[in-house]
Length: 308
Length: 166
Image (cartoon, rainbow over all chains, first blue to last red; front, side, top):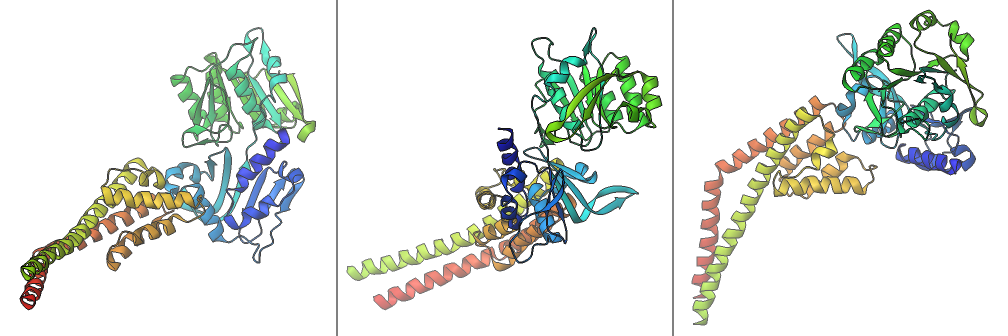
């Protein structure tokens, strides 16, 4: 069931590729289709599919198997409905959220205005990410995050590509829906890079639960203040803590009684304690627990630890 | 009696011919007026709402001809499943408008700005609207003369045929 859903998602993503490469993408055997994480398109090279073990060339049988800048421009035109101005803010940051829950990374020549990136031109490569949604993934860890006072603020840790965002997404969904033991919580998501909700045309393409408010494309530090003032959340979720100001904003939210969920790159709590942001995190005392993701693929395990 | 009836028919035919010719010219002027207004409205809405182009083209109420033109563009685009460039769909729809080659080129030129930023697209729409309006003004300035010419032509031809018949 899981495999057939992954194949359907792959084929949905393949339909977004430049027309002449679609058939090549469909030629991939099913056992590989279901494991593809991304399509990588770089001019002037053949397109590839990214699997856990590395990039795989699509089985193209035409005369010219290399992508041209026109192919990339045409794909970008099609996914933006010939209206790049309508998504200029996210394009400026190098990505687009597409209908169906896909995310397109864009590279090209930056257009600078007053020293700031105003947009991208001469597109040279695209990365079409098949965002995965694993409903029920967090069901085993969710109850371990509750203490005597309710939900404890939790940090999700794993190396890059370890599945932090996928777990956080399902955790948000689970908390927002609630269950027999715990009532549904109002969750506010600050989706700075559009990876959690993948909002396209104002609608979240991923299922984040019925009590979730999503603030997209907004810097975390500013976004936390905004939802705190406007949405009265019980939980605030953010992806990838990378800056001191994010921790300051989270401390402010925690002082208002809001619980926090966040992710951070670290293989385990030992590596977390070696991070430059750790002293700030420890001092803030915001996060009480950590979920450490170990292993990869079907072998992934989730370990909940106390942070002290 | 038959000759008189024939003469009346010829004169009536001349009148109908005049009406048809003038109606064609009136229709061409109306198309130019509607299209120039529609393109100008698109440019204005684009600047105000920054809505994606297909959403702007799907709107109606810009006049019968303009609505039919935009509907034709979007029908063709939807039929291509997004594979057919919007510019090609636009160009095909322009051909069905029956504009003069110069005016048709003006409308087709807008398609070169599809996929560009809003400034460029709005500017292309505005330029095309201005050009169509100029063409309309030109036609309106010779409208009286054209009407006289058509009337004279149809009337004199039908009188000539009537005289020959009688």
